[in-house]
Structure formats: C-alpha cells, structure tokens
Amino acid sequence: MADCYVGLMSGTSLDGVDGVIARFDADGSGLAVQAHASAPLPTDLRAELLALNTPAGADELHRAALAANGLVRVYADVVDQLLATARIERSAIRAIGTHGQTVRHRPLEFDGVGYTVQLNNPALLAELTGLDVVAEFRVRDLAAGGQGAPLVPAFHRAVFGRPDEAVAVLNLGGIANLSLIPASSDIEASVVGFDCGPANALMDHWTGLHRGQPFDADGRWAAGGTVQPALLTALLGEPFLAKLPPKSTGRDLFNPDWLASRLAGCAAEPIDIQATLAEFTVRAAADALQLFGPASRRLIVCGGGALNAHLMARLQALLPQVQVLSSADCGLLPLQVEATAFAWLAQAALARRPGNLPSVTGARGPRVLGAIYPA
Image 1: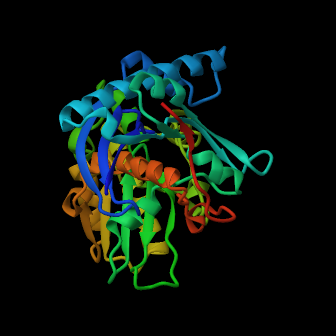
Image 2: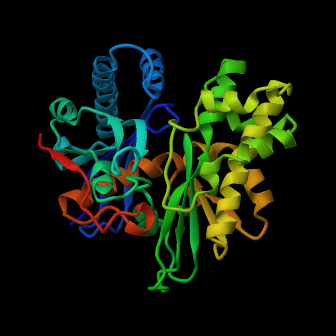
C-alpha cells in the first residue's frame, strides 16, 4: 500500500517554503502528489538568513538558532496548509522530510571532510506537527567523503528517467544543478549530477537592488537589456565552472561580493547587467550539458527558473538540438520537484534505502541519509 509523506524545501533562492504531500509505493515508485502549498518567508527572517550566509556580524550561533526556530514555524504552517488542502488526516502521514535552509556549504575543505550547515530544528517541527521528521540528509554523504550535494539526481532518475533515451534535468533555484540520467536500458552508465553555476541568486539580488522587487518576473527586465560580452566572459571565467564533477557550491561562492568584484569598472546600465546575469546562468548550464551530457536530447527544467520565459527561451536557443521542457510537461510542477524529492528521501530513510548516488557526490559508497526525529 502506498504511504503519504510531506516534503518541505526552502532553497538557496530564499523566496519561500514549498511543501507537498506525496504518495509513493513501498519501493519509492508510483509517485502521486496529493497537495502543494507554499508560504513566503517573513521579511525579517529572510534578511537574517541572507546575512547568515556569510561570516559576518556578532553572536552568529545565537542568531542562527533563533532563525532556525522561526523557519520551522513557517514549515509547520505549510504542513497545516497541506493537510487542509488535501483533506488528509494527520495520521495518514508517515513522516515529513525537511531539507532546512543552507547557510554554509564547504564540502571536503579545511580538514578533508569540510562541513555543510542547514538551519533547521527538526525536533521542534516534530513537536509542532505531531509527525515524525526526517532531516539532516547531507551530512552522512559528507562523512563518507562526498560533496553532500546534489541529492536530487536519484529522485530525478526515479521520476524522469526513460528506458530508451538519456535525459537531463536542470534545477534552476538559487543555484543551478544538472542531473544527467542515462537510458535505464544502459546498465553500465551512471547518473551524473553537479552544481553548474548560479541561477536565481544573483539575478534576484540585482533585481532587488535596482528594482525593489524580489525577482525579475518572467525575465522581462533581462529580456529588455543587452548582454555585455566582456562582462559575460569575465563571469564565465569563474574557476568553479571549469572544475570536473563531482562538485557543489552555493551562496558561499555566488554572492553579492563575488558579483561586485566582477563588476568593478563596469559602466553598463543595470538592465544590461541583468541581461548578462541571465545569459550567464543559461550559458553555464548549456555549456555543462554539452560537455558532460552530449547524448541528451531532452532537458527537463524545474525550480523557479522554469517559470522564467526568458531563461527558457535562451536555453532553447543555445541548445537547438535539445527539446527544452518544463517539468510540468512531465507531470510534476516546477515548484513541487525539490519538495517532492525530500519526501522521497524521507521514505528512503525510513526504509533504510540509500539516498545518495556515489557517482554524483563522490562518496565512498551508497549511504542511508537522514536523521529521524519521532513525533
């Protein structure tokens, strides 16, 4: 019999919390999304989470702990919305899978293991919701020598994989990550997945700075500007883009300070810089696909960037040999994909199934991911 799980995701774009109730068969197949709900982050909480992405300011441990509590209260509200929308009894939910909010991601650095920090308080979430909670998914992979990210390629394979052709999945959240999924009939090929550059993080920052808006709706502002070739070349020169997978990144790298250093001496108009940032996002992703997944003839795009018509049009223009699709065309709405992935990972944890792919993260082997906080 299929079980219901809640998945909660607040990504690096920091635009809010997405939640789903998803039903899976016992082996993780047979996905059906029962409900989707979202909630914006309160302005002061979003500002604090952004500030905690960089090591600055006083009393960070205290501020981080309180920000985690505030975030979990938003999570609990989203769970209540989901249950009301789906008209499902709380007792029908097996567990919540919650990612938390990444504020630092430094895998393999410093001591060979490094660290990744997701602000969360899963014990408080269990207390507020009366449901079992599975959290802390990334640290087990990190302990096994992996990057701890990305974790969604295993889910992408389960949902979007095809028996007869290679498929690529591009998540455009705050950071862009790419999953390259071979045809399931090709038993010798491995899934490859990695972060391939920024997505909405830099564009949203620039839009907020110059337009006072949280994001560039449908990419209309960027579409009205002119790409600056010299600036684009400088952005594409970031060494991270040339690194071979496995690799992962976040706001530790692609942040306002990084952008300001690349803009030093640039006299372009703000609208032209926005156009260039959008082009940087799609060029980095298209280059990565052509280099590491040349057999892919289908690119499925999810995350908030899939709702940006300008980004989607530019991806198709750069990849004329590839069919560029929204994940909605494949049965799962773009803002549901990552939340559903963490519901799927929660089920895997309770079933003691490995949730990572060593071919993606570089870990020494498959590992069961997540810590369980009983209700």
